[in-house]
Amino acid sequence: MEWTKEMRYRRLEEIDINEMEELKKKVNNSEWRQNFHIQPETGLLNDPNGFCFFNGEYHLFYQWFPLGPVHGLKYWYHTKSQDLVTWENVGVGIKPNHDYDSHGAYSGSAIEHNDTLYLMYTGNTRDENWERHPYQVVATMNNQGRMTKPQQANITEVPSGYTDHFRDPKVWKSGDLFYAIIGAQRENLTGCAVLYKSDNLLDWTFLGEMKTQLNEFGYMWECPDYFEDNDHGIFIFSPQGIEKSGDEFQNIYQSGYLVGQKLDLEMKEFAHGRFYELDRGFDFYAPQTTLAQDGRRILVGWMGLPEIDYPTDQDGWAHCLTLPRELTIKEGKLIQKPIEELKKLRKTKQVIEATISNETINVFKGVSFELICELIEIDSNQFGIEIRASDDEYTSIMFDSIEKEIIVDRSKSGQPVAKEYGEQRKCLITNGQIKFHLFVDVSSVEVFINDGEEVFTSRIFPRKESDEIRFFSNGGSTTFYAEKWDI
Image (cartoon, rainbow, N blue to C red; front, top):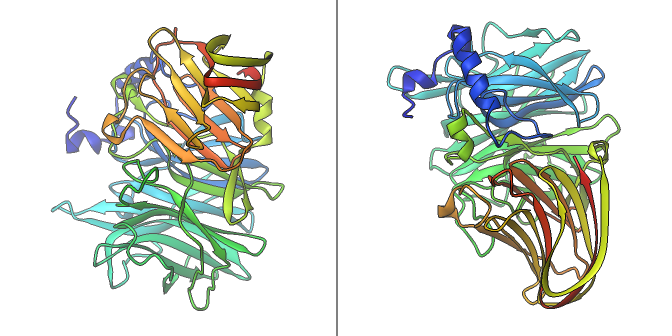
């Protein structure tokens, strides 16, 4: 189906109820609907937005085009939770119904102030020549969930020296002032981030560009997120236009982070270490963090990528969000663990301890499950797990003890996705101990290595009959222990 500009910019409010019911029926019949991930009722989901704890609940919004699996007129869709595990769909949070967001309510963030939730986002507009002009807008939500948008945008101009690729504000408070960091593109077509400040969240003053050591690092920085952890400043962003390098930067676009000293807000300087990818998998982009009620830093990402076709497109929907992860810092790197609350999803448990040698054993079955596997003794060249497996389908997660690499292979995972970007993702693991922690849903797998030292997030699209869970050891023997829970 060819989506014309007119089709992409139809408004949800103008759609006949029968058309929406037909689309919902089509989506609900999709064989790849997830069991425990946030996914759109219809259409396309992308960036998580406005992630926060407010009025006794977690709130999470996401970019949403309701009418099909394409990037069209974006709304903010609202979902909420008591525990970050069970999510309740609230409905549309922000509608693009004003002149400053006429062509979409783009990404942004949220912060609580004076018993009110302030949601700062980018309003996308296009003129008659289809030239974009971005506005930064602050909407508010009260304790009853009522959303109010301003009459005028709060930041109406792009500062001199930058193009109209200027979006995705992330807001935080330092002392008595509020700060916003916005992803930008310089006029020389290189990516960066800029800073604003405010004393009331409504009137914003441009401070200038955040100074980093990455002066020519891609052509656009999307979805910036700055936060602090003890003495560290952490800057997460999604740079576009990074060239492949060894096992790194294999996807069409990347997401990663810098760990450094706290951002010097007076000098606008951020002293930092090297850029690390957040996730080594095939499908991860545009993450956003928030503080949990108890002070943990929690991250959620978009389990998808721009400009990539997915098998669910034919069913009228696309994408989901990752499971929430707790972030901590260890030796200058972010550690990402699945949050403790996810244990609530566990149902029937099965266990195996075994030594296998130059063989593959079929142990469990499952389409939707959690699996923890620890290697006790490794005297083999390779040990791995095959999930969602059958005679001709499987997704392989393997440790190569010769190369000291984790390899995730989806060449036989079912319906292909973005094969032009490769079918394997790898990373080095120098730690001798190996632990796999998998969350497998109907059409995804999230692999946490060594308690969050590395993470691989990927969509997979096997047949529903492919439900075997197999363990293999090549070039010698491996002793392992595994626990599996149905979800």
